[in-house]
Image: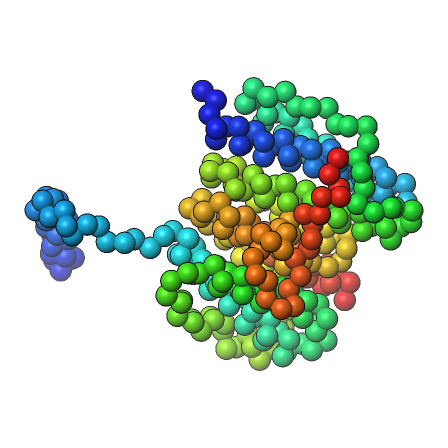
Length: 164
Length: 164
């Protein structure tokens, strides 16, 4: 409790100091402002991370359920296309390749089902729509198209689950 | 109160309306060649197009723009004389419609962007219902996607042939 209070007061003091520092810097025009990363970079990095995670899930599912190869290959190829185009839009320092987050348990199970993949696609499609507001117009269109592709993947997987 | 941004918004909404009207006409042609089992799906899509039209007319009216009436006929992208061509046409029309909705996604208004993206998702899902396959970039042309990686084929839905 006391530690918490102390941290708060330190934070409050730090917050109070910021305007002073800012005011102190006002006269130093030569320093300029630090270049801020464009919002597209953050949006692209998030989208790339999602694609990498989906690709890892499809590879796991293919390994666990070779019987689903025809359906899964088609969708996996499209995610690889998404990833390539998103990466080509990322100018500046390349994103550090982040190991996709997949649960190791899921990889070995034959129960990596179409339903789970469909749910992941639907979630990815929804997440992209929530990223549109800050994106440049052409990136927003690309993300919306990828989001539509992912929504259709979810539909395809549900159709094939029902059919199989 | 009307500025250039408003004109762009009106133009994007009018393009969607034109695509909706062209799709409604196309579904009329397709419906005549579809087997009975597929006809209810076509009727459902057609009904959704009428709902979309009503919504667009309201959106345009709230911006002081009267909606043009649909034309009597629209040029089809390919001849439709059998069930297979009718199914292809339905899928094609949905991809064209997705392209028009992506025009709305390029606008500045975040609410319109999200709306356009959700509509494009619905188009891609309906196209997949007809074609039993998905594409990587619904509604985007190869040029819009940029340098495409090998093996990824944008759907080519921006072909001008379905335009009135």
